[in-house]
Amino acid sequence: METEKIIGLFKTVTSDAVIEIALVIAFSVAIIWLSQRVLPWLAEHLHGTQRLFVLALIPTTRVIVFILATIWIVPMVIETTVQNMIAILGAAGLAIGFAMKDYVSSLIAGIVAVYELPYRPGDWIEVDGTYGEVKHIGMRAVEMVTPDDTVVFVPHLKLWSHLIHNANNGGPSLMVVTDFYLSADHDAHKVKQLLEDVALTSPYVQLKQPIVVIIKEEPWGTHYRLKAYPIDPRQQFQFMTDLTARGKVCLRAIDVKFANLSPEHAVPVTP
Image (tube, rainbow, N blue to C red):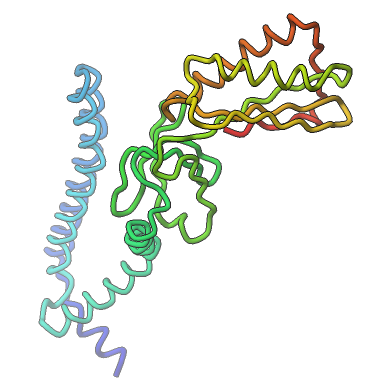
């Protein structure tokens, strides 16, 4: 009975229908091949947004041709009765739903993100090792711009299984940590005061926030972490550069030697 139902979905395909199907497939392949050759050539002769628009037409053309070819071929092979169409659409919906489960999960996570606000436009976040500023929050993904000016789209799906590190959490204050690695033989109180003065005299420092120096003794020497806040979160890298450059000059002026760390003792810099 099930076999008869499956057979009943299909028409008797004649030789004329086979030829027509073959022509439609060949014509579709030819259009896709031509678009992949002509459109890139045309884009090379354009500039700016026009070039990007033409390049974006390549995958769009392929999808449109595939849809039109499918719409043309399917009625030639399948009996388009109401019962058959319901069965086909049901099976197609199940397959599409399974294939797009991650997309649907991202949409649901996007709704949760609107409620919980783990990130907002203007926040500096780190997701799965990628750090950057949130520029736009879409239904499926959040658009970030990294310090290297690279746009990264992170699906909201990451909300379910990854840690979201938010450096400023919707506020104007973002802590910058600048590391200094010194040999152990020096006056720690003097160095601590010097680093605080370096941060206090920076043109980027936000004076209403605290300036803190953390000292930790290591087998290779002494590790200093200078914690301070820039006026604007977008100035964090200029601020870190300023503190590092002026801090090294001031430390050399008091004849403090820097530690030479071996690779196994190297400490990654936290943004």
